[in-house]
Length: 286
Image 1 (cartoon, rainbow, N blue to C red):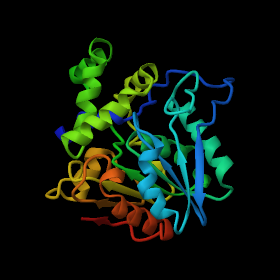
Image 2 (image 1 turned 120 degrees about the vertical axis):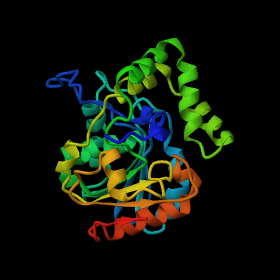
Image 3 (image 1 turned 30 degrees about the vertical axis):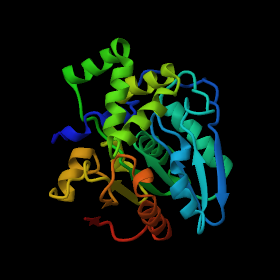
Image 4 (image 1 turned 180 degrees about the vertical axis):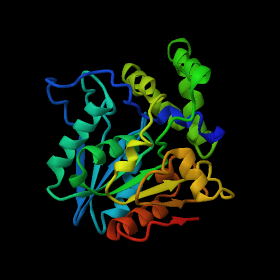
């Protein structure tokens, strides 16, 4: 597999539940995460990433709400949303599904950033009739670290949690000032919850399961994820998109991992265009 050195730290924002750690039959429903909606029209649901918050989507949501009904949804264990017990991707997916069912009777455009994209993929696989189109913003579908490197990161969760968090989130920023602010926000999330997400994060691999996605998928990437000199098929293979039946890709220039903060107008335009015409030609856009 082609490794992407620039994504080793962002790989912390990849959720996993391929481990099959818990048998969930008989477990009660997880708490429904906080969600709020505004605007009118067909529904677009925006899911933030690990250590982030729903408000990061507001610059994009305000633009989209001129034409669509927009729902902002919190990940479990973030903000005011409780963590499901036991915690797993299946449980996070179930919580997302409850929020979707409460917000719309019609299929939605589901948008996820980073780890939120993995929860969105899991929901689209579990309940394909709820999702008419899937937008994955800076989402990795397979891990970029393994072996000794992954083990070192897991040890750092206990030995140097703050240092690990600082390194990861400052790397996400478009510059050092934004990176430090992202780190401060992540550090404000309950460390027990965030450590559980990160521990699960480092072994996720949804690339094979993504071959079963039945709806159109749009990958929206920054230049550090999809280098300008690299053909889309190479990037798709490295990030786990190669098996998705109907996928197209857009690279947004001059931004870091948090595209919704760096280029909100352009991201809103891309999402809105896809929401209006999700069945367009499955081509990569450079």
